Amino acid sequence: MTASEIRPLTAVRSFPSDFLWGAATAAYQIEGAAREGGRTPSIWDTFSHTPGKVFAGHTGDVAVDHYHRFRDDVRLMTELGLGAYRFSVSWSRVQPTGRGPVAQQGLDFYRRLVDELLAAGIEPALTLYHWDLPQELEDAGGWPERPTAERFAEYAGLVADALGDRVKYWTTLNEPWCSAFLGYGSGVHAPGRTEPVAALRAAHHLNLGHGLAVQALRAALPGGCQLAVSLNLHEVRPLTPSPEDREAARRIDAVGNRVWLGPMLEGAYPEDLFADTAHLTGWSFVQNGDTATIHQPLDLLAVNYYTPTVVSHVSHIAKGAEKPRDDGHGNSEHSPWPGAGDVAFHRAPGERTAMGWPVDPSALYDLLTRTASRYPGMPLVISENGAAYEDEAGPDGTVHDPERAAYVHAHLDAVHRAIAAGVDVRGYFLWSLLDNFEWAYGYGKRFGAIHVDYDSLERTPKSSAHWYARVARTGELHPPGNV
Image (cartoon, rainbow, N blue to C red; front, side, top):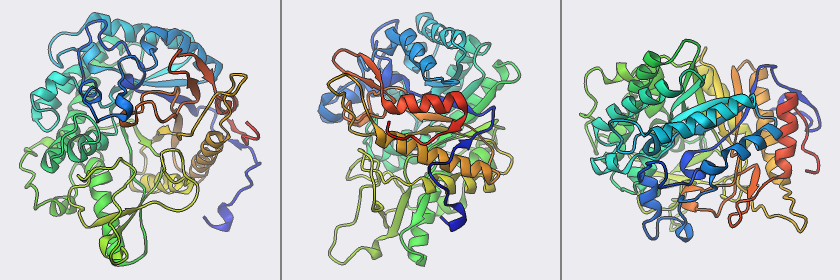
């Protein structure tokens, strides 16, 4: 950060009047009701019930029971002054086998949720896929197989037919990098497979599913709807300026970012990605016309950001020292980075969240400005940003979390600086609305603005939630103070 970019933290930043202030969740993490209304198991049901896969054997069977408590949760959103709520649809709740007719009870739940949001003046922002593939489709091969992309497009059309008259914002996929490379590469996410070629095949078919789904949505939705994809773009930084470390950063950028941005926004996969992974596959699963199908016009590019990615070549590890393996995505002897076996990951010094992730809002600014420079004219939205901390209710029942407020303040300041630099950022969704099932970490990590007692399921807005409510209502970024 240059001297000209340093601004006093006490200053108030005003955001555009139409800036969208929201919070985000995901179906499996909050809904519960795993066996109600015709819902069948997803890959996360199977994974979480597999011994040793999730912290303390936790599952999402009940989660935070949003399925039965959604009206109360919408009232809490109203108290927080949210203008929008980003949620995901459980595919196996709506289409239990992943193919064929819908389960009306499942669709009715989302109809009620959307109606409740609209009645409260909150814009629903719907994500079609947040990692919970119907188990029956995984049994047929999952995302590494082409038919899964075709089934996803059919599912997208069914949801659009049911909710398209009331939902303006539609996102196809959330973080397909995690679905492909944590699910099929390192195995730390469902379905827990450790097959590098399957991970690359999954990446392509997630891309293809996105393109086919956009086509299905455009055909079913009325004009004025906004279509997006949500990518956890990695702000990749070389440990040193050396050519070897810059090469390491290029490799991670290829398999972390450009594997999605290339076909989705440019109509082609990066040639260097093909070269990096040629020892694994010849990419023959990419058929003629696929990249044209993937390259569909989007109204928004949604970006999820938490922490930067710092890498080096393994030659820069001290002699005799173990190669750093922890990239912030869980420990596994299997890498989620095919084609990058000679890359080492590093965590920057300084403040960290409860996840062990370094706090660095400058990387969000760099990510936004770099993305806007590469794709001018593409509006951006922050679809996830937040932090986990060790939140505990005090004797009086209140939950004070000044660290979270400080984290969000610093990152919103980075967003404001990006807007001032000319980046078209349309909104910000805090992750997460509620403490919830945090994937392989179970209920051991709390990201929520609202504290959940996992025994009673009582909800208590944390002090950061009250601060964020003021920001959302006024559109002004006030210092968090002693929240």
